[in-house]
Length: 77
Image (tube, rainbow, N blue to C red; front, side, top):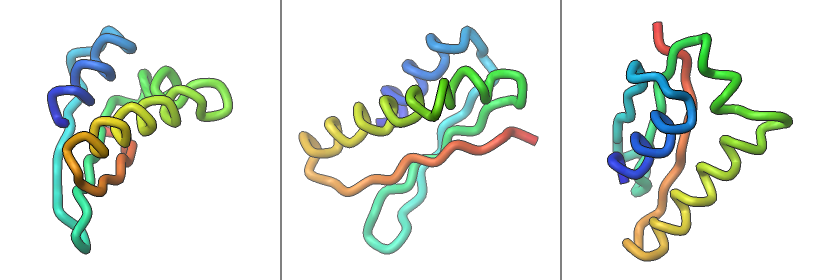
């Protein structure tokens, strides 16, 4: 899943400075996409459509893997 999210985000933005981390929270896999401030707008998209699409793709993959997931987006500091 980390590879999928990394592939999508890096190719959407063209930035190599994006990291994806994984943590388990209350029985769910939580994936956090950390990106620089200048590419956050590209990942969020107009009215949040892009991040919503990324989350939907990740959930579709999670259904195949039979896991519960959350995808968060954070600014890299």
